[in-house]
Image (cartoon, rainbow, N blue to C red):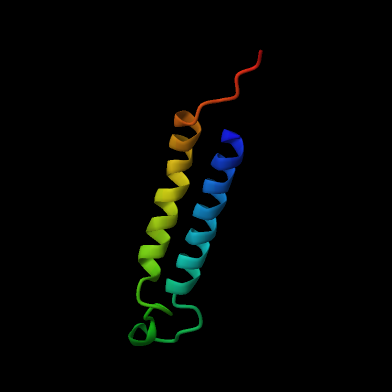
Length: 69
């Protein structure tokens, strides 16, 4: 079960990183004056994604594994 939660945590983190990066990158702008992020907290979403992706290692280590009898 811990593999599922670790993978889920990693996928959520990567998705947030991609969304945050694409929303804050100045795609198609011709000057720096028009390079604002698409929404205000886009860089924070990227950082949150990095934190969640790195915390997937903690999830793997802290969740108990199944006991096999």
